[in-house]
Length: 116
Image (cartoon, rainbow, N blue to C red; front, side, top):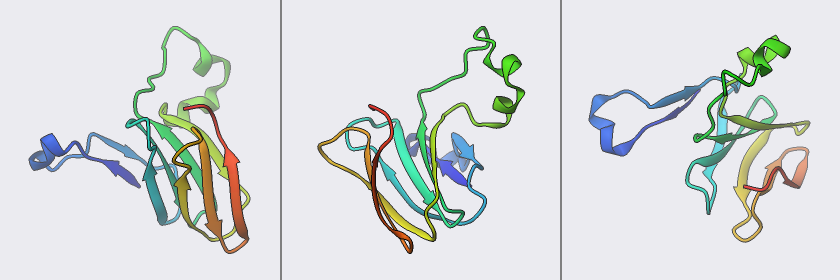
């Protein structure tokens, strides 16, 4: 699980958010260099996930009723990249918004997710 703490409230001992999207150990987490609410995580489950803590589901949009599978996904999950084997680490490019670089047993991958 990924847990996010607010250091101003750290003494409470409770995270402000917990995400259980990865099904194996998380191998790398990195915050976006320009957007402090966005981060990416890689895991031993061969996934890279991108998260935006500022996103909230709009109950009036009707997207969950149209596709009930969306109810199981965290509303802050923006993007999932799969297909690499044994992901080790990921890094945001410092000058190209949305560009991620990952290293894995299967190779070195550079891809752009969304414009953040």
